[in-house]
Every structure is written in C-alpha cells, then in structure tokens.
Length: 254
Image 1: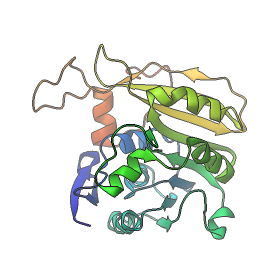
Image 2: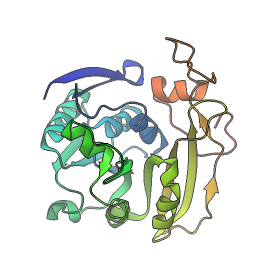
Image 3: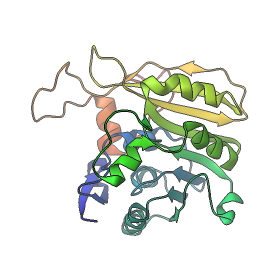
Image 4: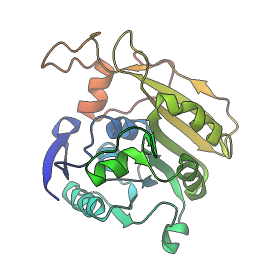
C-alpha cells in the first residue's frame, strides 16, 4: 500500500493513509469531537480504518485506553503505525466486528465510536479500489454495528456515531433497543443546504428523552469561494484546534 502522511487538527496529528484507497476527511474528526470521553476511560472504535477518529480523540483527551477493530489487514497495519507515531495507547485488532476474538468479547467499554459504511450493498456504482469500496459500502448490516456496540458498552456507556442524514430513521429505529438519551446533531455543509450528515450520541440503558439539536454549520458561504475553506468558527475550532463538540443547546453556534 502506497501511503501519504496528512495533517489533522491543525498539525497536532499526522496520519498515514492510502494514496488510492479510502481517505479520511472531516467525518472522523467530527466523530471524535462528539465523543464525551474523559481521561482514563476505555474507548472502542468499530471499523477504525487507519485510526483517524480514535487518534483525533486521543489528541484531545489524555490517558484513554483505545481499541480499534478493523477487518482489512493493510488498514489495520497502518493504524498500528499511526498509533505508535502518535504515542497513543491503542490496540488494533484485525477482525470482522461480527466475529470478535474471545478476549475482546470479554471486555466492556465506556465509549464506542463508529463511522459505518454509508451506502448499502448494491447501491450505486462500486469503487475500483477494494479498500475504498469496503469502507463506503456496507457488507455488514447497520443492525450488527449497533448491536455489537451495545454488547461491548458498559451500563450507561456512550455510543457515538456519524452517518448519512438519509439513514437517520434507520439509526433511530435500531437505537430503540437498549439505548436512551439519544441526541442528534445534524451537520449542514453550507447556509441554505440540507444537512447531509448526522452525529448521534446514545447512552446504553438511559431513559432520558430524545433531543434534536440545531445543526452544526460547517462553512460560512452559500457556495465555495475559492481556495479559502471558509469554515465557521465552530467548525474551525473542531477541525483545526481539536475542540470538542458540546451537545448543549446553550452553546452559541451549535
């Protein structure tokens, strides 16, 4: 695998990722920023790829015990290199999330992160690169992703995931089984456009009612102004300064 070394979080983190396969952009950074992990807690990322989300989280929160599960050997190997380079305590397990090793099935976690493939099997035209195709198009049903997360979470543990806005009804239906305190933060790319992503947080065993938050606006301008990325202040803080996304209606700009 030919890789490039790319900067995230304003240069706080550098990630090796395939030049021609699946390449991380803003989604794993937003996913990490939405996770309410505290120092010393255990975090599991399902489908960790090269480790971008977990390592972005580690760059913000010290002392985490990280575990990543990735079924593609080449991506898992790169994730291990990225964790070592970042100085993060992260174990990367090469496995399908539906067939976790017995030792991992004995563990429980304070948090589970997931960025499941956005597209269902058979939808659209497949990518030529096998790694990109596996990352983008689901072979494992979303119900399995959420079911495995639920099984591995401690009571009152948090699931944080990012998905397409159009898949939100399916996500909410699946979260009815065993989760509460479900909170949805739409991600709106530009003013006047519909949200195209959703960040979802849910707590295992909680009874707190559902909340739908105002959208997180990523760009200020209604159209791309040129070379300048025109991020909003909130998006800039998350993407460049490793700021968390507070799931709090009282926070201006969220």
